[in-house]
Amino acid sequence: MTTAQDKLDDLLRHGRCIIGEPVGVHYSPKVDEQQAAKGDLWRVELSAGCNLAGLGDFARDGVVIFEKREGQAWEPQSFLAKLLATYASELTDQKDPEAFEGAQKSLAK
Image 1 (cartoon, rainbow, N blue to C red):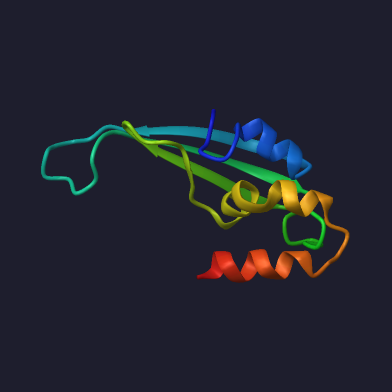
Image 2 (cartoon, rainbow, N blue to C red):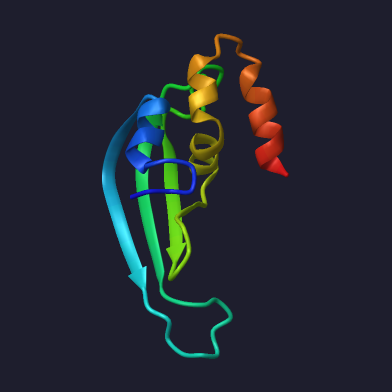
């Protein structure tokens, strides 16, 4: 599965994540033309324990959720997915525990 940022397995590897169970893939077809959202919806959900510098126990048991609508790219939906998609490669190289503060503030907006 390729996201706009990188392949999901690469994001998880950069975040030093271990995938837990269950891993789910859900599909919701578009029911009718009256739906506001365009196209079918795919959703990938998994639990993961990640070891990102500066996070402590925060990411040790998190949920990674990505969704994709027909004709669009996979997009992160959960907080941990957004964190991995945006900051995983930067955070794994950081030794400063304050490195997470900027990521947390920008994702909270």
